Amino acid sequence: MDIVLHPIGYVENAFEQMTAPEEIAAQPSRIVLEPAYLDGLLGLDQVEKLLVVYYFDRAHEVRLQLHPRDDRSKPLRGVFATRTPYRPNHLGVTVVRLVRIEGNVLTVEGLDALNRTPVLDIKPFEPALDGPAPDPHH
Image (cartoon, rainbow, N blue to C red; front, top):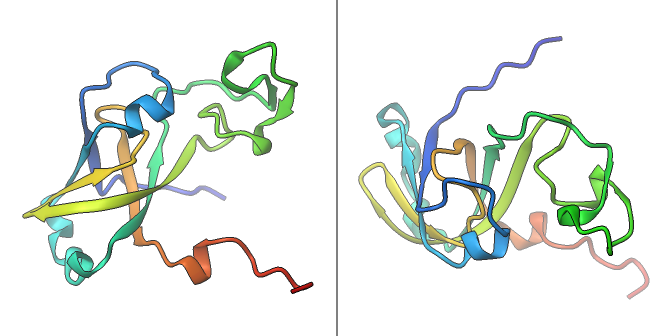
């Protein structure tokens, strides 16, 4: 089965190379949507937080086990126990705060993607769906 995804837009910020995610997330980024998707922004101005799905286009390898952030002082972990870009499908997901929308450009805070990273989808963050599962013991 082939799965084909097409970017809906791209990230714009000052980060061209791998940088600590918290350093990237500390600076505002812009998501520039392709004009064809402009109508899809209707009502998004009522949303405070977004889930941004993007493609790690500069991660060309897969590591099933690694030391988080290549820090050998940290225990070896499986890829699914980390936030590494070296994933089987190279997908990233981050919760961001929407600052403003100007035409087809969304300014966000908290995005940890590099400049020109392809954005695959944007969804409203809904704590009831996207937050921790309820504890069945309480």
